[in-house]
Length: 352
Length: 189
Image (cartoon, rainbow over all chains, first blue to last red; front, side):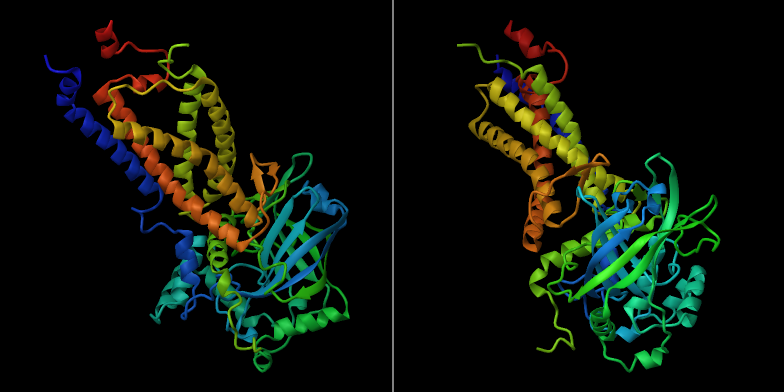
């Protein structure tokens, strides 16, 4: 009689094939989930790579909105926001902020006068570790409706094919609306004279459980002074940073935080569409910028202004952008922190 | 001296299968979430954090149970290289079950991301903000996830090998449910 082990081994071919099939299927499912069989999947890596300027990204820096300057100050809540959201920073009081004025460009060498969109990253901290981060821009609506379209726009605008933009614009009529704004809206000579808009919608939940879909804007108390773009082109490449650092010496800068509440049927999922002007707007407090600091060793440098870092009482809505931004910002953050040795990149004006 | 247990205790078996589901889900969610910008990114990352904390807790309970109740001996006729592989891979699996959640938590802390579980529970930061620490922990978390998955596959293959080819009682020691009488048991009676 043969040993029991050998007799078992003789009939092992079937089980061995079965084991190989089970393990192979698990490995294939894993690879599929990771996107290895889905080259068409829009990944954060692809989005971040698409933003890179022709000479490659500035190592150690944000992959978009790369030029910026830090600020610190406080958010002074008047209490009106508590009717809409139980977020702790809406209760009357003062909350520390760390923010960043920035330009919507991936090119660290871009002159300030060449960048149409200006932005603000803002973090408001409440006691107990609750944090609200938001990254806003000064246009009243977004160029396109979906993250896929934004990717398409970035790819088309970086394309060597001169028809790429025409083709893209043809397929995305909302872009013409934005183009008209970019052509006609006045430019200003200061970060302090710009409004900053969330554009994306979020859901506010009050202490009583009532929910509202909202967008928000920071409206400057400084009077905007229009300056023709060809006038701005004559200024220093970093005139915005120089101006704001100079301006703060004259005292704190202020913005009112205004929450706009959607009504049924408003396009909450599409930041390329404005909501009607007559929507309820609640002034919930004042952002007071007290100090400006260069980004290199400034407090904003290490903050990822991920718009999905939200306190209790604020959540994401059906707007697909915050998730896409969170995913791409995180990739940008992972890359730039790994390249920290390269930061700050030498810029033409950063002469010793 | 008490005789060697032939099976893991019901508590150990329950923990094993519960954690098997959690860890497989965790690995799939992990590779899935970092490859998408779709709206599902947010729920995936939220589940990944909360589930990571659950796995860490379960792993610590399991380690204590292993320490308290031990494990059935491997079959005497198991070849020495397989015995070594079995023992070594189990040490690494335990280490990863505990290390991966801690690496993730440390990585988020070093990046200054608030760590919020189950939609509201704030975990404290376990490390100060640091680019270098973040990068180190991020790399460890990322690459060890693939090591973890490879080990899980090996573990699965070995378990099936014991169950279907060797039929030596090793699989049965951790099998869910009450003991089934195997061919081998009947033969030994």
